[in-house]
Structure formats: structure tokens, C-alpha cells
Length: 108
Length: 118
Image (cartoon, rainbow over all chains, first blue to last red):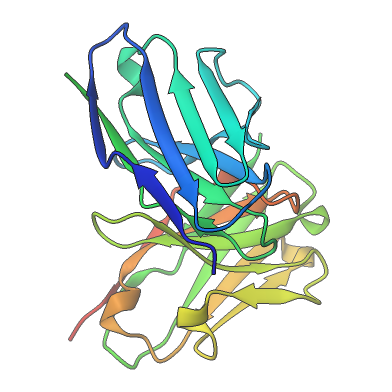
């Protein structure tokens, strides 16, 4: 099983600043990595797939990078609506998937 | 507009059974893999199972193998999850999601809560 580890567990950032979230895989997943955003009481929303491709309708302030075992989600200038929990997901082991435990992005 | 609406959740005793349904609309259901993902209260996401377009392939996370069965009815645009021998640790919100078969889950329902408790 591929284990996904996200850090930090909680990130406190001020609106307008940059946020950088990390995701590490226990073995290489190539670029088969996605990022999701989940707000309280809502379903997750796909943000990024293929490690760096934004999903339809996702603002350009969201960007993803990395390959192999190390990945980063960057939000360039935080808006109020961006404070949420973010999950990474590997699909290199398709059709079996695993998620990271999540990073909570909170207002500083 | 793609819509996924789950139903069938509720309170069940340990060892009991429950069948979840997911009604799909706004896309050609029979052209997509579909997945179930769950989220225990206050916890992260856990992929549970997925199924190929024609139902010929099904995959499960180890913790539910032999207890849960995923199925679909393309004529009814519906996805199902039969859950047997339920345990307290199966308590979660269960989401159905469209599976792109490239590996990403691009549309999700709002979820249905399953509580396993005596």
C-alpha cells in the first residue's frame, strides 16, 4: 500500500499571503497525484490532477508541483474562501487509491 | 450539470447491514468508473471501492473486502454499496464520486451518514 503523508497538519496563514502545503508518498507515484479541497459540511472538490494541472474552474492562484515522492500545493494569495482542509491522493496504483490525512489551512 | 445524490444511510447495530444508493444525472453514467469514499467523523478521506463502467471489475480497500459489495445499474443511472457485518469503525459519511478512470474523482455527492452503534 502506498502511504501518503501530508505536512503540516495545520497551517496558519494570513489572507493575501502565500500558503505551501506538502505531500509525500512512501514510494514513487510518478505524477499520478491529485489535490482536493474540502470545506466544512461540504464534499471534497478536485483542484489539481497530474500533480500540476488545474481542474476545470479552479483559479490560477492554485498551483501544484512535484513528481515521484514529493509534492507541493501552493496558493499564491490566500482568499477568505481558501481556508479549508486539503487532501492529496495518489492514483499511481490505479484503480486502488490512497489519500493523505489532510492539512487544515486556517486564518492567522 | 453533473449531480450525484446519495441515500440509504442511517443508524445500524454492529453486525447489521445497510445498502447505500447513489443516483447520478447530468452525464452518461455508463461511460464512467464510479467510486465510494468515506470519511469518519472528524477524520480524513478513505477510498472504499470502485467499479468499472460495465460492472465487470470491482476493487476494494482491504478493510472492507468480503463485507462490502459495490454494484451499479446503468439502466437506472445508479450506484450501490451493500454493507454487511458492519462495525463501529465503519461509521462515516459515505460519498459517491465519479471516477475519471485516469484516477481522479472529479464530481462528488454530498454524502450520506452511516452510524454503526448499539
